Amino acid sequence: METDTIAAISTPMGEGAIAIVRLSGPQAVSTAAGLFQGKDLNNVDSHTMHYGKIIDPETGEMAEEVMVSVMRAPKTFTREDIVEINCHGGLVSVNRVLEIALAAGSRLAEPGEFTKRAFMNGRIDLSQAEAVMDLIRAKTDRAMDVALKQMDGRLSNLIHNLRQKLLETLAHVEVNIDYPEYDDVEEMSHDMMEQKTKEVHEEVERILETAKQGKILREGLGTAIIGRPNVGKSSLMNALVHENKAIVTEIPGTTRDVIEEYVNVRGVPLRLIDTAGIRETEDIVERIGVERSRQVLKEADLILLVLNYGDELTEEDEKLFEAISDMNVIVIVNKTDLEKKLDLERVKELANDQPVITTALIREEGIDQLEQAIGETFFEGDLDAGDMTYVSNVRHVQLLKQAKQALEDAQNGMEMGVPLDVVQIDVTRTWEILGEIVGESVHDSLIDQLFSQFCLGK
Ligand code: GDP
Image (cartoon, rainbow, N blue to C red; front, side, top):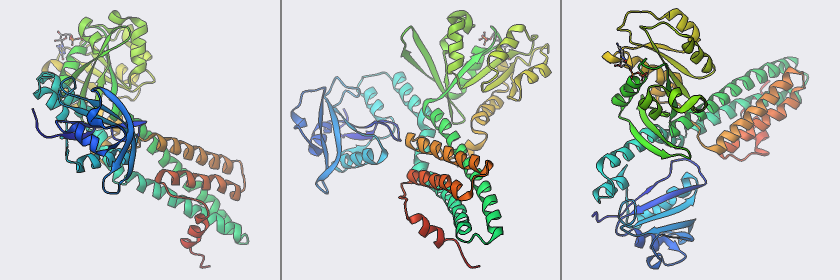
């Protein structure tokens, strides 16, 4: 048994309705009891939950309103005493509770340490422990990165630049309103307004696009491998799994157990959907029926369609292409070691600009190219550069959507010839909405700022 007590935030980084700080170890309960104002946690029954407050010992003030679960050894995940402090979601509050717990004598847990303890104490076996750790890692390495970058201020910088652009534009319009005698100013203002709203709109769209990627980073990219029997689907999956160490999780479903495997391909966590279907019967449609396979396709973010180089295209292949025409697809032409029978030109035509990769999986050829294509499809090469800013915060996404709408209102207005001082209202609104993301207050500071940074020299 370990003698120290560890603590960590056990829920994903970012905003959620609740976030949990977990403590495990011999002093878990007494540590929590020392921070907690409510019942005396030292004397509560095991596996009970209690409402109260976490008090910051430094200030003596309430740090957070919480629900605390007390679970005593041995019937816990780690087989040690465990306390889980349910905080309000949000990085700030949960971090504060963690800090207080650490200051009270617990130690920050290393990644996977709760699981390690579960293993050490005989709660799970090593393969299970590894599976849990790998799963956590595969799914959140990038997500963690994203959260860290966000805290690093990347998003705020981006938003700040966008607001600056809008502010400059607004300043021009303001001058135009105040000094209507300058004709050229009006011209300039109109062009500038058009140009800048377009630029900001594009950038807001781009940031919103990353929200989707942020979700993928958190949840894994739902990936379905499809193709006729015997083309090499299982071989493909084995290759991906073999190269990238997969973790199998069995999720008890309503009708049957779905087996999902996660593999981490170039930083893209792939969640291989319904691999059981592929493995066990070669043919996903055969095993789970047409309806269910449609459902699988619908759930997928990425389709890996496998074809056989040594075989002619069939009607079934063409139908598969049709079924996935509006999805993200990577076509894999496998068995290039065989004599060519496949009409590659036709395949490229059907692929419609989506990547076509050739492989000879039996010789382990082409897997690198495939992995690169997977990386590129989703991050357009940007991911490796590591400089993307992802928004994952729901509030930010909502505000960005509102900003996008306001910009579109402005653009529509300009198109319809609405006067600039009216268009200005939508642009100001955009500026304010973006300001809410970075938490800057708005109101009458606008005019001050406008003129402080715009030179009225002429
Ligand atoms: P699935 O039915 O689509 O899952 O296909 P499998 O992965 O089970 O492969 C069917 C057969 O094709 C197996 O005997 C594999 O060994 C073989 N196979 C897989 N990849 C290649 C390849 O690149 N070249 C050749 N010649 N055979 C392959």
